[in-house]
Each structure stands twice: as C-alpha cells, then as structure tokens.
Image (cartoon, rainbow, N blue to C red; front, side, top):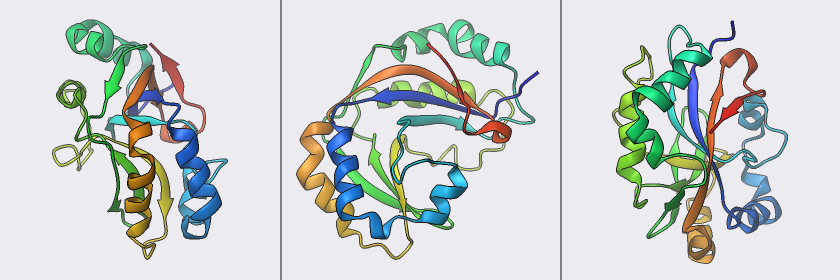
Length: 190
C-alpha cells in the first residue's frame, strides 16, 4: 500500500502565466537551480500550483484514510474547498520567506477571503499524526519558485506591482496527495 505524507489543494489561475513568463524571462538568473532539482521540477517555476495543507504525516497515511478525513469526517470543511470553488484574494501580494537553502517566492494567501477555511482544513488534517514543525506558524501560500538566498527583495515587489490585479482568483482543482518516495507522481482527487 502506498503511503502519503503531504496533502495539498490544487489551484489554477490564468493570472499565473504572465507571472511565470516574467520570472523566466527577467529573473531566471536568481532562481536556485539546486533547490529546483531537489524538488524534481522540470521547469524553473512551479507548474503544479497548490497550497500545502499539511506536510509530514507520520509514518505515512493510506489513501482511504486521507479520503475519509478530507471528504467524510470533515465534510463541512471539504465543501468549502471542493473542486470548482474559487478562492478570492482581496489584496494579492507576492513576497518571500527564507527557507534553509533558498528564498521562497510566493503568492501570500493571508488576504484570501477563504483563509479561515484553509486554516480550518489544516487543523483538521493535523489530527492525523504528523511531525510538521511549522504548522502553527504556516501561512497558506502558493510557491512560484525558489530563489537564491541573496536574490534581491525587489523581485517580489516588482511582480506585485505589475501582476497583483491578475491574481485575485484561484479555482480549486482538487486535492493533491504525495509521498516522499514518489514526489513527482502525486495522486489527485476532488
């Protein structure tokens, strides 16, 4: 049986394409190639946009347990985040945070009108044994790419100024579940 340790909420937005193009065309020299390779990405930008709901489920959880937790046990929370629903960002901001080995360039979901719904589902999923040390401090976001630690902060500001109006809506595509053993082959359900 395959075991999963990460649950994400898949998203799509037509506003991501111009942001990705700008990163690839103007900022690729700042992208952390080692981190991209470590993540198994085939591009310099995240091509499978998502918000992580929980990471570090231990020792790993079967598909049926996740399905039951997401869609049956926590049905009220699931219905607020089901496929086809739209997340609204009232004031989209692209910013960064420093990871151990990279600067994460991301769309911050703090201004999302459904922010509390995201946090509620994260809390419900945290009832499954996990070792995610950042859960209490985690702010839902969509990673665009990983930058070198010394990349200028002005990249995020420039992207926000130019592209924020395009990033006000994200359609949920469903849940994405993955395991460390097969990170490039996640499974999906809605």
